Amino acid sequence: MFNNLLTKPTVRLLLNVNQLNVCNAILTNRSTLHGLFKLRVPILDNSTCNVTPNSIHGHFLRQVSLFWLDETSIIPKHALNAIERLLKDICNNNFPFGGKIIRFGGDFRQILPVSKRGQPAEIVESCIKCSLHWRWVQKFALTEKMRAQNGEGEFSQSLLQLGNGTTPVKEEDPFKGCIEIPEQCIIRENEMIVEKIFGDADQSNYSISVILTSTNVDSLSINEEVFECLLGEVKINLSADQIDTDDLNERNNFPVEFLNSLTPTGMPTLCLKLKIGCVIMLLRNLYLKARLCYGIRLKVCALQNNYIDAEVLTGVSGGKRVFVPRIQLAPTDSNLPLVLKRRQFPVKLTYSIIINKSQGQTFDRVGVYLKKACFSHGQLYVACSRTRAFNSLFFKNDKHLI
Image: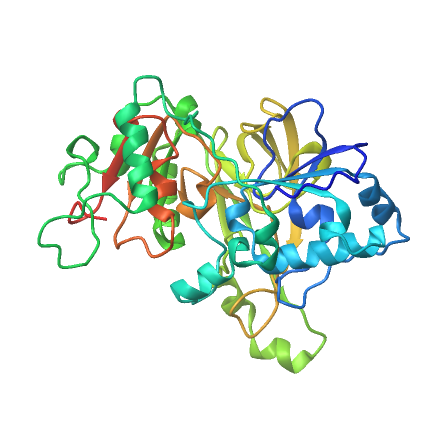
């Protein structure tokens, strides 16, 4: 935590990197990190915030005395550098972060910033613990695990061992570092993970269960399998695709049929199939003041041609009815040689999500489906800590090894 006693408390501001959480009433103006500081995407070492000192937003940031950043393990250090340069500029001083108090909350056993095709050393290097600002941080450790149920001391202890890398590895392990899954958590070979997690639950309770995977491909296939089991009439929503260019020759090089076959990361599919009662997740920040931000889970109540009537399932807005419109999506941070513009509902089914997207959430029943070993720091720890006890955590893979 950065402390500077020269700052006079006037405003309390909570920042949450992934999604909006319940917080104390004295904390106001909750927002995402990118939304508040106007960070550009992607974040590079020379990135800046799109805020000027004389703007209304710059004046607002000057009045804030406390910034509370949640899930800080996934904040890249370049974002922290850009924020410090902004706060120094708008506060017109050279104190760290312009003399503001920055309070971090997070667990570095969890997933670190994503570095595309990066080696482990590059991923660690992008973490804020490798920032020059870390030397000013005062560290405070929590002593009680709030997510685990009472009487689940063994579960809590095993999670800490897993996060600290002290879990005993399997004898004669050919993969160097694989661990044995507890017997009570293994799904037998003749059982399907979809039946184990959702088979004995009422459809209205599907929202409190989830299947976690390490790749988007596995997540999409599991979502399709669960969707086929749901009751109700299917409504098919097709997208409108084009490339972002005025060059007619360039458009002819990429016909609509080719564009329809693409589904970049973070984009909805061409053919979005939905049913009333199914559970979906927002893929874009729609309206932060109403807490309609990326990662919020919704239950479909009605389906119209141009909007989805849904009920919020997570966060402080739980139970609120909202409308989700069709919007134009155009990701710039993709591996495609073009900028794809897709007009579609910014949602996806969320019976199965990748492990990275589950960070910060809690479920009553969690299945972990792994075709291959986890490939990123903290993935297995995050997957196992999304629930409260051993009897609500289940694994499915070929060798019963992680």
